[in-house]
Length: 238
Image 1: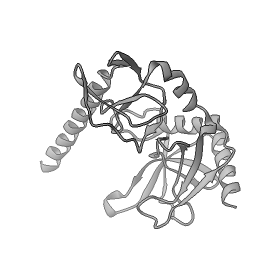
Image 2 (image 1 turned 45 degrees about the vertical axis):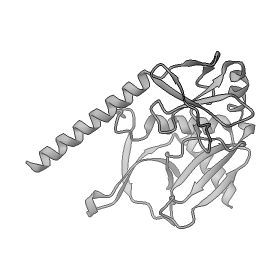
Image 3 (image 1 turned 135 degrees about the vertical axis):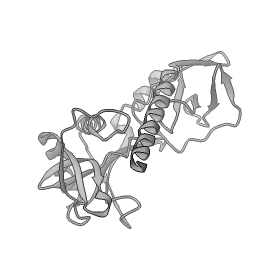
Image 4 (image 1 turned 180 degrees about the vertical axis):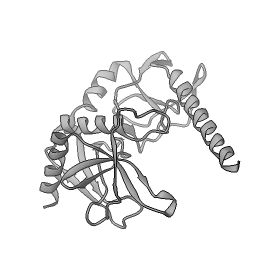
């Protein structure tokens, strides 16, 4: 009986969080006008803002609150809304195209692979990836976004398989990401990979089996795409 109650509470919590996320996304404005200037979102695509500092004054526009970002190059405002903890950045419309062009140009980024699990391995290696194929990098991230485990979204298309938990030395955890040269944006770092039997696998989740067993639940990265990153990584760490 206690287990049934626990399961019911978990389901209720997931439904509540899911509905909150949907509601939060539903009310995110595309544009906002502050002091006669129109600001527009979306200039940085799927990147995540970080290391930003903000001015203290809060602008209230309807039900939303905004603060200006301390940055001389662009006129940005930020609001803690949307479906992520990073909130949403808006750029003044007269600078939007310039900012969008900058943050979609691969030459304005440095690409990395973290080899080893953060906070678990003592010293994960951060390897710089020069001359990466930007299209393939985006393909890998898009594949991961569509096939990663998400408690709020059904992953019906994700074809998973179970394998023994990989050893840290034989097959360390891999995270591919990029950072903008100005240090203000990074790609999502939550997608994890392993190379096992010369195949690149996306981590769906680690199953620790309540202490009874340990398995990796993974999704096969498309062969051609996976081989590109395996060869790229072999070249970098050789």
